[in-house]
Length: 35
Image: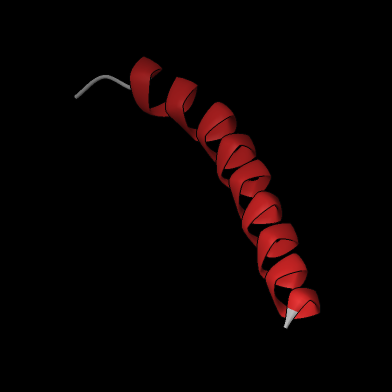
């Protein structure tokens, strides 16, 4: 049970880092692109 929580925690942290990387790379492009 404890291992499951640890795995979930690590996966969620990895998802946060992946999301931050995605945002930091995509947001400037979206912001700079004229509509």
